[in-house]
Length: 303
Image 1 (cartoon, rainbow, N blue to C red):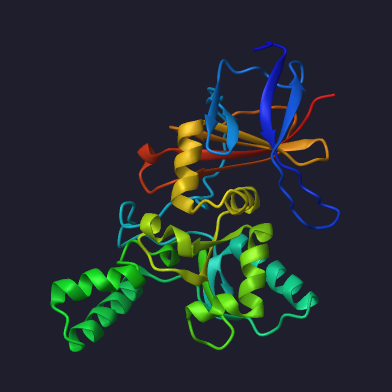
Image 2 (image 1 turned 90 degrees about the vertical axis):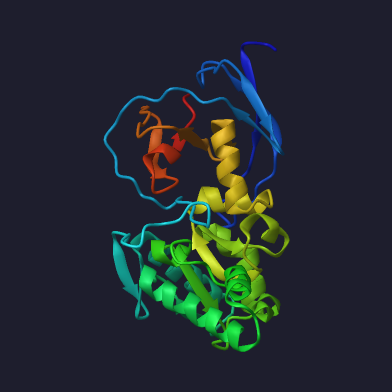
């Protein structure tokens, strides 16, 4: 391979039209624009760079990329910081801003009536919901053990609920959380557009074997725009995306306006600084520091 170039898979972002349209293109980046890593890793549909060793810098863990599921549970005592109110529900402050913008844009195209059904839930609240589900299944004739297994497919076990993070919302049109929501005008719009605001449909129909949760078109999880867009474009659920970033080390994609996102994995709380970084965030991906961190940098090509 010519050492003066790096072949990267790119995505295009049309910000003027307020639509993010990603297309994977092969683009040559001249060596003096970016440092050349020692190797490239091809993962799935994208070509990504092997991880570099970033330098330390003070920052705050946003925790927006925490992966919570039965294999990565939260402690009963965990309560997120930066919770604010949204229509009577507590929610992460950043997620609230994104949700309100999404709601505003839905109304602008004539879609009304989206109802917020749930956001932050404490561990004990999730425990009560889970226990109630088990109770109802036992009344239907299931054994206690069988009822618990069945319940876990539709209700997150306590500690495995994203609602405890304050980053998940349940929405509906008629007040009912049903798969029928996917066929409504609002449900279709959300599926196609929520990533523009940093939200993903967390439990997709075709990914139940991975998420271990039934299809929930009403359950949205905030992860931030670049991550949500990448998952939507590549048909990845959250578990798959976290695995991809961890294994790849670095993912780069082009925004079409002289800027690009650099998403990288670090096993420790460290950051890399550069003069051409426009924005930076770091998020742990689990409650344990050993789970590692994902760093998101919006950068501009040097001229």
